[in-house]
Length: 407
Image 1 (spheres, rainbow, N blue to C red):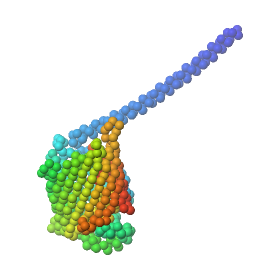
Image 2 (cartoon, rainbow, N blue to C red):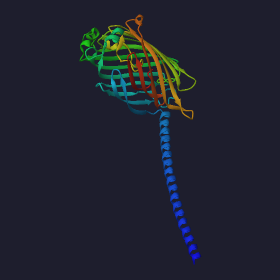
Image 3 (cartoon, rainbow, N blue to C red):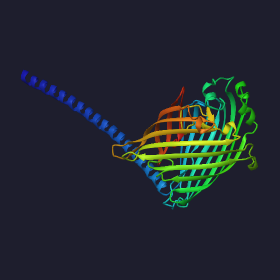
């Protein structure tokens, strides 16, 4: 009897352990199935996202190939010496003027609108358009800005030695600019045509320092300027708004007159030279620019030649350094990263150094303003970047959020 009981006891223990083993195995198996199911779900979602992204990319490429309009909205902050903290909305618009014309590039018209912590408001666009197999080009700049600003006077010494304060430099400035040009190609890479320049600068609420400035006193009640002129271009760049190779030369001469409806009589002559060198591969570019702007006659303070804008020596107060003539040089390295598969990434960076000067005549270019900086680039449309630049000048710096390259 004892042997039977021990047998039964052994059997029940065995069955109990086996049952527990089966139960635990079932739980582990179910857990495994569950975890695999979760992983499968995650993989499925990941694949779905990839498919959606690929589909969006394919549709976008179809639009590009068909020459259809692309609209890319963005929003971002910046900080410049004149506007301080700024929140800007950017809209990149690009299109082909003829979707069947394979010889023309995509035209662009980026829109920039925003406000700053100082109470400034600005809006503007810069049209670059190509027509009829690039036989014609139409450009148009349209900008409006109203902002609390600082006016330091005219000349290097005034700009450098006048302290910025509510009593010496502060005033409110309203500014408008409309500048269309129409060019036609008369030889390969060579264009010529007429241009119109309408601009308006009016100051208000001047501080004592601004109100006593002789240029402000003479020209502030003569704010409107209207000019006609001619523009010549040599342009062998592969893509004008973001060149990897080629060179560009622009020469323009304008006459501003009361006979045209403006308030002042003066002349303008400008030379802008740029060269772009591809360094071993696409997306690595050395860009250089030399530009001079010479004026003569009764030039109002708002139309003096200036350096330190978001398009040249970034990092200075826009409008601090102004005189009849200016000259600057800038060299910028642009680098677009490479993906693992060897294709170009949408991201990249730039770094630059520059130097410039102002004077009443070219012989006055004896005091120079150094400049350097770096920036981030992200391609929002083919060869069209949004840029975030940090520039450093003498005793000043600025952060710029904008569309397309500075030059």
